[in-house]
Every structure is written in structure tokens, then in C-alpha cells.
Length: 223
Image (tube, rainbow, N blue to C red; front, side, top):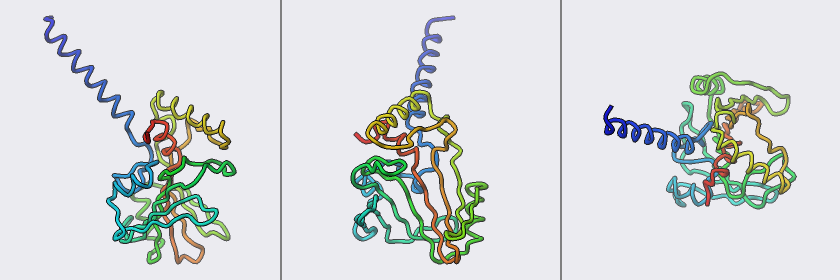
């Protein structure tokens, strides 16, 4: 075998490994925050820039007392699962709250909430199950029904290097006073919930960043 084909083969393999590795490191795990351009953990300014938001198409609602979030509310209704609702992007605000079970980093996109006022509950459930698959449903006497979809991606879906970074970052936060930040390999990366009020008049779909926020921060997403 001549040297040239051998060298060429080695270069091709090296390129595949290099770009394959980069793709793995940059992969977004779990459910994305509803809009393809958004990434969990983005700052308020990054969200505004990415979606090209202005005072004409969005409103920024400052956090009220004891609130952990700045809310970015889009002016136009957004269609998801066959029905239109109002979109709220939740950005963490203030210092880490060590009294909570766990806390997100400051100034990070950590949830997206879609509010439905004019909807058909049964149709909404069917449409979501068509897209997301079967889910777990819980009914409570006071809160109504909560249906939960957990992402198929788990902590075990991460590369060993990413897991190491995530665990180290969580240990650092725990050392600063945060609680329950011990990701397990079987833990889902994040989830989506559908909450329907007991009277059936309102529904809320919530995309949670959950571990995806911590994963992106542990990758040094924000410098």
C-alpha cells in the first residue's frame, strides 16, 4: 500500500473524529426552549438579541417582590400544538436563592411558559401526545390536572467529559449553599408539563430548562 492513500485515509478519519467530537460537545440535550434559536441558560440580552425583540413585539416585566424571574412576554400569540397562546420567557433574576431546593445561575433562561385561554383541553392533550408521545398524568383536588413529558435524553446521554464538567459545576454550587444538585445518570435532562385548571378554563404549557441549564453553564456557554 502506497503512503499517499494511507496518509489520506488517516486525515479523513482525523477530520471525522474532530468534527464528530465538536458536534457532541455542542449538542443541545433534552427539549429545546420552544424556539430553535434559543438555548437554555442564555442571558436576558442574548434572548433579546437572538429573537430580535423590541418594545413593539415584546414586553419585559421586572420581577415583583419574592419573584425569582424577569419575564419576557411576546406581544403576538404563538401557535403550538394546534392552538395559539401567549409566550412568556422566564429569566432568573437576582442572587442564588439557597433556600430553594435548587437554584439556577443568575440571569439565565430557565423556563418558557405558554398560556392558553381559548382552547379545547382534549384536543390540546391529543396534539401534544402526537408530538411528544405518551405522558404521565396527575390529578389533584385543588390544582386540576398536570401532565408531564420527560425528555428521552438522560444525564447518561452526555459524554464522559461533559458529565465530569456538569458534576464539578454542581459540586461548586452545592459548596456555595445550593441544595439537591446531584444529577443521577438516569435523571431526565428536562421536561414539559401541561397544567389544566380544575374548571378547565385555562391551560399552561411549561418547558423547563432543568439540567440543560447547568449543562450549558458547565460548558462555559457564558463567558
